[in-house]
Amino acid sequence: MHVNSNHRHRSLPPIRYLLVLLLFVMSAVAFLDRTNISVAGIDISREYAIDNTHLGWVFSAFLVGYAIFQVPTGLLARRIGPRYVLSLGIAWCSVFAALTALVPPTLRDALPVLVLVRFGLGVGEATMYPAASQFVERWFPVGERGKANGLVFAGVGIGAGLTPPIVTAIILRHGWRAAFWFSATIDAVVSLVWYLAARDNPAQHPFVGEAEKALIGGEQNQSNPSIVRSEPPRDAKRSIPWTKIFTSKDVFSLTLSYFAFVYVAWIFFAWFYIYMAQVRGLNLKTSAIFSMLPFIAMTIGCLGGGTVSDWIASRFGLRAGRCLLPALSLGLTAILLVTGSRAHSVATAGVTLACGAGVLYISQSGFWAVSADIAGENVGVVSAIMNMGGQLGGACSASLTPLIAAHIGWEMSFVAAASISALGAGGWLIIDPMKNCNAAGTD
Image (cartoon, rainbow, N blue to C red; front, side, top):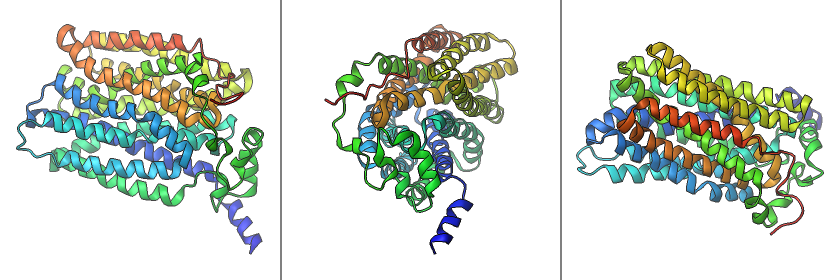
C-alpha cells in the first residue's frame, strides 16, 4: 500500500503547480468580477441616468473596499491560511455579484446603492492576492516565486481579456443583469473547488510526495522548518514586526510604485472599453474586440516577466532580476501611453496602448516576488500593505480619468497616467530585495 501511494505521487505533476494553476483561474474570475461593470457601464449609465464622472464613483467604491481590507485579509491569511480565506472571499464575491443584478430598475436614486454593493464586492476580493501571495511563499522555493506569481497574475489578463466579449454577448442577448448572475455562479463554483483542492502548506496535502516536500523545504526550512511539517508555521504565532515594516524604505517604495502600477492598470480595466466606444467611435462588438488586446498583452507580459525575472535573478543577482525589469517596464509604459493616446488611427491607438498594458505587466510578478523576498512569513501583511497602496491608486484612476477627460481631454488622462508610471519606475531604484524587514526580533 505504501508503494502504491509513492507511485501515485510520482505519477502526478508537482502539486504546487496544479494549485497555482487553480489560482490562475481564480485570478481570472476575480477580474471578471471587477471588470464586468465597465462593459455593462454603458447600459447601467443609461438605465439609471448616471454620467461617466458618477460612474467613476461606482468603479472607485470597489477599489476603496478592496484597499481598506487588504491588511485585515493579509493578517487573516497569515493566521488561518490561504485555503479558508480564499474560499470565503470568493463565496462573498458571489453574493455581491448577485446583489448587483438585484438593484431594482425602477430605483430612482440607484447611485448610492451601486456604490455600497461595489464596496462590498471589493471587501470580498481583498482576500485574493494577499492570500495567494501567502500561498506562494509557503509552497514555492525562492527561485520559483517569480514564475509562480507570473502564473497567478496571468489570470488578470485572461479574466479581463475574456470579459469584454463574454459580457457583451450576454448583455446583447439577455441584458446586463444576466452578466452579474453569470459571475455569481462562477464565483460559487470556484470557491468550492479551491476549498476541496487546496491546503495551507505542503505537509497537509495528501498528494504531495516526499520529493516535492524536500524541494520546497530545501530553501525554506532554515528560517521556517514547520513549512514541511503538518503544524502551522511558527511565525504565524509570533507578533508582527510592525515598526520594521512601516519604517522600511523598501516597503514604502514598493507601495508607492504599486500605486503607480495600479493607477495605470485601472485605465484599462475601468475605461478602455468605454474609451474605444465613446471616444474612438467603435460599436459595442468592435470595442469589445479591441478591448481584449490590452489584456492579451497583460497575460503575455505576466508570464514572460515572471520567467525573465527568475532567469535574471539566477544569473545576475536578486536585485537585478527583481528591480531592474520593473523599472524598465514602467518607464517604457509611460512612453507607450503618450504615443498611443496621440495616435490618429484607431487601430494604431488601440495596439499601441495595448502594448503599454503588456509592458506594464512585465513588472507585475516583481512586486509580489519582492514582497515575499523582504517579508518571509509576513508576506500576507506586507503584500497587503503594498496592494492597499496600489488599489488606492486604482481608485484615483477610476475617478480622475473621466474627470480629467471631461475638463482637458482624454489625451491628458493618458499623459497623467504616463507621468505617474514614470515616477513608479523611479521607485524601483530604491528597493533592495535582499533586505528582510522581518529579521531580528518582533514588536
